[in-house]
Length: 290
Image (cartoon, rainbow, N blue to C red; front, side, top):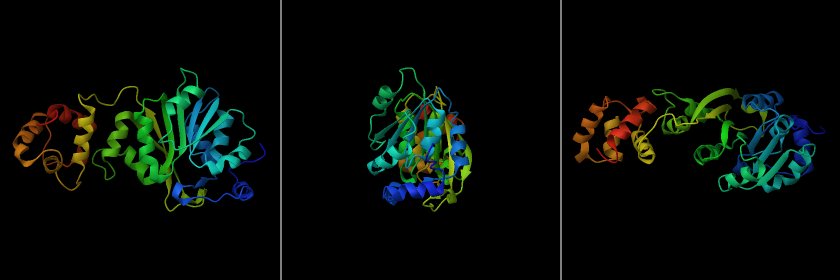
């Protein structure tokens, strides 16, 4: 391989050669630590049979590591200015295809269908820009794609929210939404010093193993998540107050109390103390209204 993009000097030389300027608006912080790049691929369990969807290859540092180990890498990059850079840094690999466009707008079903066998299970690996972390993760988890594992580097604080348990400060509606569909585990924390340019905060790599079946069964998934959002609307308020103010109204308070008593949930608790199983029980008991 003639250009190892995990080398800070090589990264700077390639960026200079192609007169590429990094855009802060796109969250372009390129990772340049070889050990961390290898650890990300290891955490994703990449081997010679793996089909990998990489979101945001940037200058190709992680792509090089993935392509050296995987059967195929499908990279999606929003910034077409990186086309000559990636053509340069990935010239030694014939198992990489690059699709330019916004991952939130692209038809990933079509891309995966064209690039992978019908029975392939895809592993997603990405260094996600902080500003679009949540919408990208939710698209990957809700779109019905043939994905088994997602390994992403994201802001450390957000990673903590994804893995948080009931009662923890970072536990919230995002924790439940992700854990409903996947099993999260923080693999490692990553200091801001290993990026070019250096971001303002530290990052973490988190692995999400997509569940074959949702963590809980609910009669009405849409209402289940409306209930959760309402319960976390004002974190300092009790569950009862949040439900009355954000999902129902004061005329239904007595009915709400009866339902909460029936499912064994104290109305004086805060939403952040309820487990996903308790929210499921409450959702089914309430239906569309108490």
